[in-house]
Amino acid sequence: MAVILGKSAVLKVSTTIGGAYTTVAPLDTIELEKGYESADIAAFGDAAAHKTPSLQVFSGSCSGKRDRADAGQVIVDAALTNATVLCVQILEDGTNGWKAECVLSPKKQSAKQGPDAETFGFSFEISGGVAPTAVP
Amino acid sequence: MTVQLAKSCAIYLGGQSTAFVSEAMSDVGGGTRLLYQIADANKVEFDPGVAITVYDDASPVTSTDYAVDYVQGLVTFSVARAAGHTITISGSYRPVVQVAQANSVELEYGYESADISHFGDAAPRKTPSLKLLKGSFSTLDSIRDDLEAGGGSTVIQSLLAAPFFIQVSNGLDVLRAWVVADPVKTQPKQGPEAIAWTVPFTGIVQACVGRPSTDQAMWKWSTT
Image (cartoon, rainbow over all chains, first blue to last red; front, side):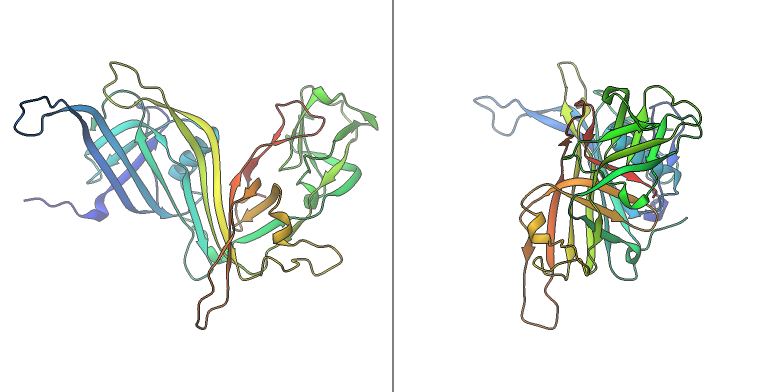
């Protein structure tokens, strides 16, 4: 059994699906939902639920500390400012994972008087009409 | 890595509209004489409700020959100005007043998406659509307090009835935005804590008096 330590996870972004990806840092949380939605195809006479896999799902979010000098955060900021899609790559162990073209939900940035750093986070959802692809 | 410490943040609100006449503008476009900014850094928040006139060597420039960035005090000419000419501007600005007792701020910044999926798509198909800004700040000031110590008057409660200007800075980045307030909230509780007010807001587009519809006062991030 080879467990994957949470600290190994990496989120990278690129402006094109086949382009070079840049790590977004420093993050402390990444969430990913990957799979498919189901279509209900139940009909009279069925003894149980009758469903079939349908649209692919690839969505999630990340959060961490705000660092305006981080190259990945700069790319995210540009996409949000210019209202463009962004290709998101989630590597659960730093090497293996998935990627997809996504639209971003509004970035959340917050600050509270105290000793802590500003935090930021954003959500993403697949948007290209095609299934996510495996990495590498 | 350079994280921003939350304690470096500051909130400012736009005060009373204040006229300026023939203010100097500086070439900030690397010498191209296309991009100019009002030289007085305290007056970059132009009031979109007051007409602006730009002058080239004291002669008014045709209003369609330039674009105005109302939240950063910038003018972009379609044709470079002649070398040695003096560019000035008349209009009005909203001097900002610090919300001195502010102690937290949250921002949501980005865009909404339109679903453009069609038959045959294996996954959702979406495209970026309207830009979006939402947020809130909390302060220990009462919304009835005058934030200005001097002769002017800026009262949060008075600002809420109409679009107002807000500036959020963290020591490195500055967000300047025109917003409208959502209902403010306070929740006094028996105990040792001070009463705080939370002011939620949503970014909006403001029409700019006397300007083409392509000039829209809304919001922008900058480093100064």
